[in-house]
Length: 201
Image 1 (cartoon, one colour):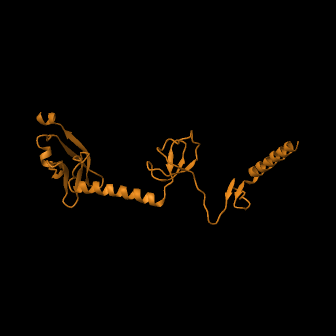
Image 2: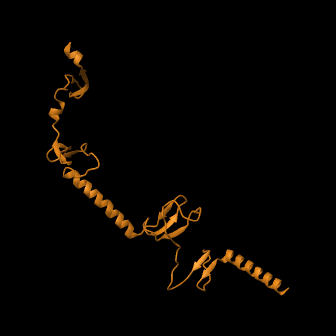
Image 3: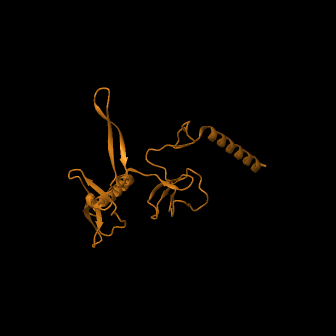
C-alpha cells in the first residue's frame, strides 16, 4: 500500500514539473528561466557542449531521418571540422570569419593565376582552350587574340581587319538623299541602297 502511495505521489510530482516546464521553461544554473525561453542555461565559467559527430557526407547522418534545425559539431576529416545544421536536405556549415577569409583567398589566388596566364599569353597545362579570347588596347587601337603555339601555350597575335575582309568585299553601297528644310539647311532625309544586281545592270 505504501509503495502505491509513493508511486502516486511521484507521478503527480512529475505532472507538476511537466506543467511548470511548459509554462515557465527549464533553467540550469539555479536561476529563474527567462520567460521567452524553453531552456535557459546560465553560467559564468562553462559552456554548452554540442554533440560531436564524424560526418562522412553532407546528406546523411547515421541514426535516421534528421529533423530540420539539428545542430552538431563535425570532428571528422572528410568534411571541414566545425558546426553544421540540417536545413531539411543537407548539412550546412556555420561559417566563421577564418573560414570565409580562407575561401576568399583561394578564389583570389585562382583569379590572379587565370588573369596572369591570359595576359602573358597563357600558361602550361591549360585545361581549356582560350584562343577565342580577343583583347583591345585603347592606346594603340589594336585587337589581338591568343594563338596556340608548339609549346602548349599561347602567343599574342594582332588581328588585321584589312586582310580579314579581302576577297569577300561587297560592291553594294548606300547613298544619302538630302533636302533643304524650312530654315534653309540641307539635311539627310533618307538613304538609297544599291545592290550588286542594280550596279551590274
